[in-house]
Amino acid sequence: MKRLASLLLCLTILITPGCWNKVEINELAFIMAIGIDTAAGNSYLVSFQIAMPAGKGGEEAQGKTRNITLSFKSPNLREAAMQLNKTLDKAPFTGQTRLVVFSEGLARQGLIPVMDYLTRFYRLRRNVNLLVTKGRAADLFQTGPSGGDVPALNLAQRVEACNKWGLDEKITVGNFTTKLATGKIDPVIPGVEVLSGKTGEIRFPANQEELAVRELAVFRGDRLQGWLDEEETRGYMYTTGKALRGHVTVPFKEKESFQLFLVKPKISEKVAVEDGQPVIKLKVTSDADLVEAAASLDSSPEKWHQIGPDITAKAGEVVQGEILSAVKKAQETYRSDIFGFGQLIYRDKPDLWRQISAEWQEEFPRVKVEVEADICLRRSSATVNPPYPSEDKERLPLGE
Image 1 (cartoon, rainbow, N blue to C red):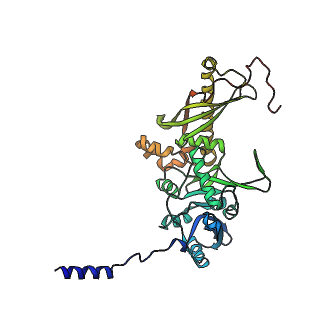
Image 2: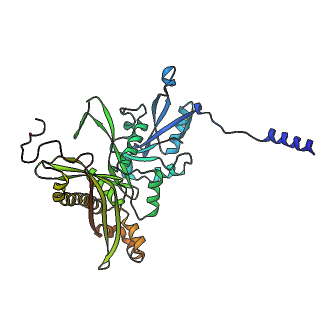
Image 3: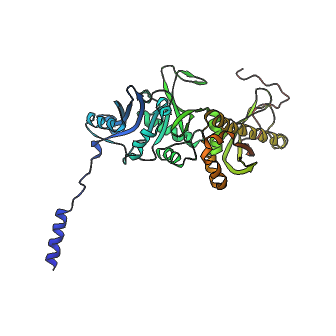
């Protein structure tokens, strides 16, 4: 019996396959980002940014990497991937892909055809970040940002940083497709652009280029309608509860202001019915830290007891204005329910939703939105009094 068992065990070892489909890591080409542009002839220009070992000797030992970007004109994404297979001497691997970037022109035509491939391809993770660029995605990958050898990795880190500071929403393949599937909320995607020389108030050497994640692309369904600027983007973040932090500039006297840092702002949403029509009632509450007092006054506790309520009230007005600005553009300009008001009505007033759901696209611009903001000053950070004389003494203008 023991001999028979031993014989069966040996046969099992011989016929049991091992890692039959294994691929060594040095046989893989890691695709870090995919860029998709429109091309002539109803085609796509698909760009792949690939991280490669830096080479020989000390560079490779230090773990440095270089990158190459290959672009292919193709009628569909699958054929572009096949062309990439024919070009590389390694197997393309999308398990570490961090970004998919769409050009504005492609986004305006509609993203369902390309999203179909991205969601079906099982090796592409659903947590891959999406971005929209006002230029060409292929050109974006040629930009060499400071602080990194692979632009896609550097850009992915900036997306994470913007989301962490509440400056922009992080949208993934899974987020985007889920919003499309619900039919009750229109998606958004963060924007990215190349900055060179002097762009607005941002300055750096003329021969240097940087990538900046800024503004928010607004969609109706799968088609891009337009953009929210930075102020409107903050309003969107407050409204959707995605703002983990916030920054408010409160004007005070002429050319002076207070800077408040909002700590974990929260949003509460309610649906009321007036004359048979839905009314969305929003309330933002947040603690705040005083991070800069550029006003010529004493910010001691005694003084704050007098002016504190006025400052926090004005901060609430600023937050309220940013929210209303975002709502107005979404309703009047783009007619896109990016805030999920339809989903809120469906959840809180299902009977009302059944009456208006069929005409929601026409109803949404007419929905009344009321906003209230309650800001509470928590502390004045690491100091009490400002390091300049009191308001009865003359202060020199800035820069003198």
